[in-house]
Image (cartoon, rainbow, N blue to C red; front, side):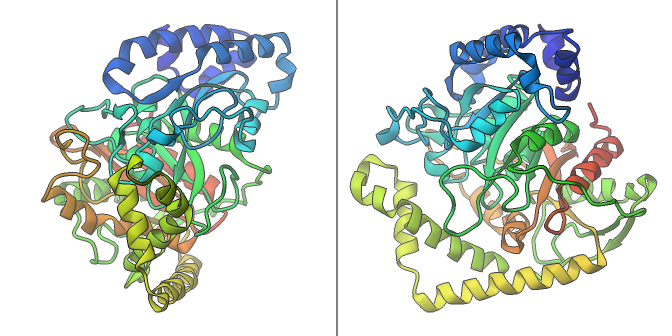
Amino acid sequence: MDDLLRLSAVRVVEALRDREVSPLELLDAVEVRLAEVEPVVNALTTACLARARERARRLCADPAGAGHPAWLAGLPVTVKDVVDVAGVPTTYGSVPYRDNVPTRSDPLVERIERRGGIVVGKTSVPEFCSGADTVNALTGRTANPVDATVSCGASSGGAAAAVAAGEVWCGHGTDTAGSIRIPAAFCGVVGLRPTPGLVSGGDGDPAGFEVHGPLARTAADAGLLFAAMLAEPVRAPARPRRPRVAFSPDLGGTVPVDAEVGRLCARVAQRLPDAGYRVEADAPAADGVHDACLTLLAHRAAVLHGDRVDRYRTTVGPVLRAEVAAGRRIPADRLDAARRTRARTRRTTATFFERYDILALPTFGVPPWPVPPGPAPYPEQPHLDRAATVWPLATLAPMAGCPAVSVPCGRTAAGHPVGLQLVGPPGSDHHLLRAAADVETLAGVAA
């Protein structure tokens, strides 16, 4: 069973198509692994193995339904606990929703299952994805499988932890302002924030920041789930013969990145010419971008969650209440200015990508912080201040409307993973995943 779990998703899907292994055998392996590690990692809010086995039996009886070469052929996957799976609770990590059981799956889940994915569980989130760590009042804290004393990040921390712990090969996540990429970096896995609009799912985001994307142990595995998630097939444009990379360890000197994180990212960036890339030191203008993003995120929280905070009051947690209150205090002129900054960021970044194919920079500028005591959803001081100062590395891509992927590029002396982030112009998702695979090889972390 362990041998199956150690294989890449790409290899497992090949074995499924060749009938070397069945979906039911994979579920047996997943069930054993969940029993071993879930009591420690706590990545899942709900396991749905009986439902998964029923779908696996149907797939075994009619394998032609998952025979497309880009599809999953019976691969077990997880879904973040913010998207509906029929018959499985969608709690959003929130007490008032503990008994919320949808009768119909979200169209994204239907698409994944129609293309051969088998959902084995829902992964943990902070309440309505608020806060900086994956902890909630319903299921407690998710541990980082690499080192349980440090954070697994948020808000797709459960998805990243489940993949890193070998519970599944791939998992679904969402990314608003780093929620796929930061947990991927902290847990040492690959996480893709796709181009907005390519993967539709959930109830929509009035701010247009949130996207759905894959987390996996390798770039190739992430690409496999990404293909199954796409609303419409996307044809990858021709790859430049020698892709042009702009590398900045600190976003043009604007972000005080931890020295060890910066060195690890620079070490791999300096090797990119060995894989056929042209690398220069450069970064797009980022003045005011992060502050504008925070304004738009606060307003988004008020629009999305204001009614439920009014309805449930103290039954929802203090972080969600505080985010809604902050959003409601934003004056109209400040909101308008933030929107203008966002439009300007899209223009300036588009101009930047006329000169370059990829922007490479750290995913997050500090290693994972120590887990705070109790159920606190934020790190203790001074870790909170340090995290806040390096967050602009993650908010540039959503403000610019760009895809971005986090790929492991090494570990600190303490053994904690560090992610290199690759950002590209809209529609460059496949190029970014190919570049991420090159980074894996150059960093010596390829599976």
